[in-house]
Structure formats: structure tokens, C-alpha cells
Image (cartoon, rainbow over all chains, first blue to last red; front, top):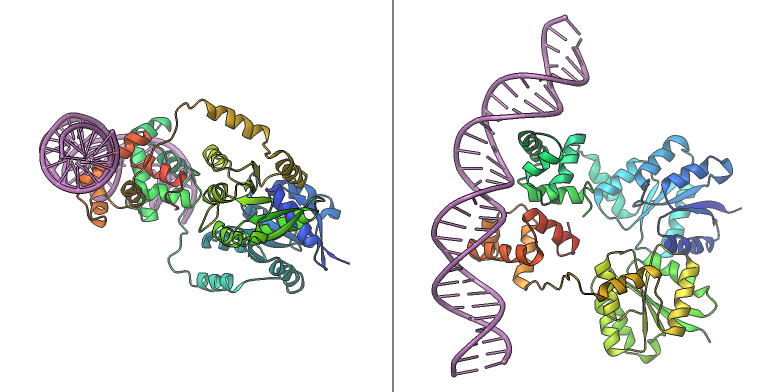
Length: 212
Length: 212
DNA sequence: TTTAAAAAGGGGTAAATCCCCCTTTTTTTA
DNA sequence: TAAAAAAAGGGGGATTTACCCCTTTTTAAA
């Protein structure tokens, strides 16, 4: 009996190609393919559709890999999630692992490594490369953390700040006084340790608050 | 006799998976896989390694799809290039087509469409979806074009401008007078129709001059 | 229900940015 | 080689931004 695998990935060509790859492995077969997390959760309502392993992309529209993994951990803890991504950003990897992923694979890997990872996840419950293990160790000592909490209003302001508008114009758009806006800016600068608006824009883009 | 296809793609998992897909098509077989354009050109030195079709990713390190396609058009015009990308940015598509690609496929497509595209490219010399055709038609009337040429010095300045440095500091780092830097800025603003540094940062990131 | 905190708004100032318009030197190119 | 274009440098002023420190109102918590 083969273990069942579901692929959640928005790029159809990749998911179909991956599907072929996995079906070629001795111990695994693809149950079905989803384009995003929402679709997956809908499918799961039928117990027949619950696989042993979910191969999950991180960047997806509608419901991304992190949210979806967290939801699975909550509702279907027996399902093992193997994250699959081009993303090598430390924070994203950590978020994914915290959300409950059992392993993290870069898309830039050999198919034999994928097979190995699937076997390990199924048999031992987790799979981690040396890199990710080091990352985990490094994250144990909390050091300087970005546990900064941005308020909704501030996040909205940041999005406006990523345009050519002046603060006055932003204030106008958000129906606030320019001075309030400057207050937002100042407190954000302080929280995030930024020097100026350029730094804010870079931060917003890095943290995906704003997509250029 | 099957037509030969070479895949140029930096994500190994995707290229291996694609490879399996294409080998499953009746009329095509994969000759080999490359991780970037440079590797491809090296391989081409042996005439045995020259395929009918190259399936080319656009975003690659070392030598990207556009440069590579241009080089192939120059040196091996008989090889047909089919571009493959997640990129849906109009300008990139146009650049790729101008460089000589015979078709443009999104990674977000069915495998049957890939097979179809390969067949059409091989038999008729090109494959274009309705979207791309419309884009081509649209680009005929030159309208407002971004044929702006940025000088080396200006590009270097832009990279510095994507940090928290002031212009004075940038001038210092580039061993130029602050006034020269302001001159760069002003001429860039004019050429690119920007209003302020924020706009410049967004432009730099969009056009990949700066990667956050 | 008092107390404390966020949230919203503000004043003043120094620095940075933007936007003109201008000269000298170097490099192209016709 | 003369003319033109590009690169480097600059002056002055208006605007915007950044950074203090301060008040009122609203919201949450003890």
C-alpha cells in the first residue's frame, strides 16, 4: 500500500510535473492536486480526501502555505506537512515551521532528495536539512527579535508610504490630520529602528506588507 | 524519431519534474537539463548537444533567459526557444519575444498546453496565447515607451538610494560631490517621471535594479 | 469606577529633499 | 579637429521630512 500525498501549489505546470515525479516513487502516490489552501480545506471535508502527507507551497493566492499549515495543525494534526518553496528567507521558514510543517524543502533540490524527505517525514515524523536545523538552533536564543506588533492603522499607513504621496496627501487619503500621520511614522520608525522613509519602504517590501 | 528538447531552469526540482512530463509526450524527449544560460552555451559547443527546442526559464542566476535567448538567436538561429516563466510583467514578456523567443508559456498552465505549445513551435515555428498576441498588437503602436537609458553611474546611485543613506552619505560612498549626486537624482526623476525618492525605490525594486 | 493605556492631534526646529537654473571639464562624434 | 553631448560640480530657495516634547480624547483594564 502506497502512502498518499496531496500537492498544494498554484503553478499548475509545476504541480502536474511534481505529481508525475511523486507517482514515480515506490512508496507514494498523488491523491489529488490543489491550487490553494482554501481548496484543500474544502476537499478535507470528505475524510476520503485526507492524505498522509501534504506537499505545500508557501506563496499562494487566497490562502497561503503558512495559514493553511496552521489550520491543518489545528484541525487535522495527523496530516504531515512538507513545505516546498523557492523562499529562503529565514523568517518565512521559521513561520512555516512554527505553523507546524514537518519539513522544509527548497524547489532547488534533486528529486531523490524529495523522495528521501517524503520517506523520512512519513517514517520519523520530520525531515530537516542541515541548514534548517542550524536555523532552528539559532532561533532558540531569542536574541533581537522582530516581535514588533504593528497596528492596523499603522500597516495601512505603511502601504500609503510606499507611494510617491507626501505625508500630507496620505493624511488626506486616510482622513486623518497630517500630525497624526507623522505620529504613526515616528512610532513605526522607533519600533522598527528605521531612519527614514526609504528604510520604511524597504521594510514594507521585505515583509510583504507592500508588493511593488 | 522524437524531437529533442533541452530545459534551462535553475530550480532543479522543477526541471526534473518537467523533464518527466516532456518525456511522457509522444513526439518529444529531453536531451539534457541546464541550470543557467552559461551552462547551455558551453554545452552547445558540441553539435550533438544542439536540440530542436529549448524550454527556457527567464529568471536565472549567472545568465538569464533574455540574454541567453539573444545569444542563441545570434549563434544558433535554428534552435527554437519557448519561454517559461511565472513572470507576467508585460515588459519582460516583450523583451523575451524581442530577444527571439518563439513562444511564451506561464508556469501556471496545464501539461496538455505545454505539449501543444511544443508541437506548434516545432511545426509552425511559433506559439502564442491570445494574451501574448494582444500584448504584441498593443506594443505595435509605440505609445509611451520606457526606452529610457540609465547610465552606469546612475544605476549605481539608484542602488545606494535604496538604503537609509542620505544623499550626502551616498556622495561620500561614491566619492562624488553631493551636488553631482543631486544632479543624478534630478535627471533620473525627469527621465523616469518620478516625484521623489520613494518613487525611485519602488522603481528600482520593480525593475530589479535593487533586490530587497 | 478610577486608572492607565492607546489613539489622535499638535508646535517648533533642524536637516534632508526637491527643483529650478548655471558653469566647467571631459568625451563623442560628425 | 571643431561641434555637440555627456559628466561633474554648484547656488539658492521652497518643500518635505524627521525628531523633539506636549495635550486632549477615547478605550481598555484593574
